[in-house]
Length: 119
Image 1 (spheres, rainbow, N blue to C red):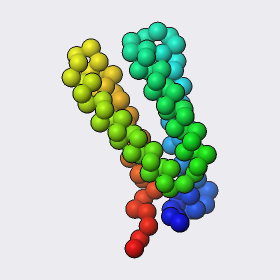
Image 2: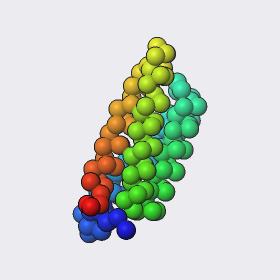
Image 3: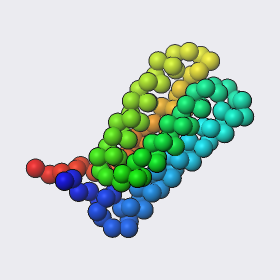
């Protein structure tokens, strides 16, 4: 069993995990509000809003190091998927914003888990 500070380190580790997932949920709500207001990229904001809320709920419910690691992988893949979208001048701003958000969330999730098991 993998034991890390975020899972077993007491209230300080759990507090950091809660902050990351609460931030992710807030980001999901922000995306959905942008979609509902009919701003640019309505579909993209809608899909990302749902994804962020579901991801926050699943990771918070699981509360394991593996869940945070998988969450970091999802965020990294999301950031990578935005790079081709940045080639379109109409979507460049949105895509670059998503790359930064994905990078911040990836780093936050990895920081929670740390180096994992030692052999």
